[in-house]
Length: 123
Image (cartoon, rainbow, N blue to C red; front, side, top):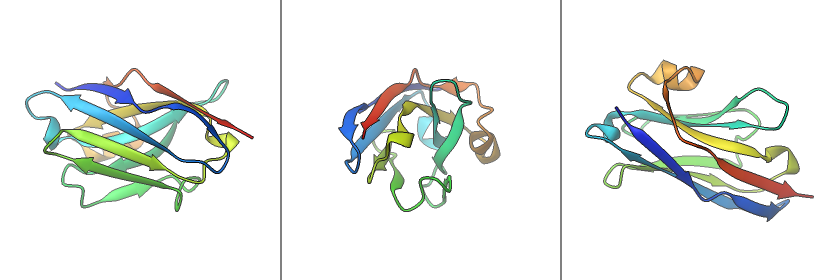
């Protein structure tokens, strides 16, 4: 099993940047593919970005391509989401997810989730 704890959310003006972090704990945490999802009020949770256990493959939602970058540091069992050029539409609770299976992370059907961190972008 793996436990996930997000940090780094906050309030930022449109055009600004934030860096989210997700610390994973567990014996095999570095073996897990990891991803970020977000949920805005009144909306379904949606995929944002994902990265394989090696960091060799990444995937992004079209809405964040070119603005967000996902990365990982397996020595620290941490995944980061660098968010630049933020827009008010990026306002949401951001969740970290993990799974051994890449397709499960992409689909968001894993059982392993963090508690979420709020990101608010003001116009």
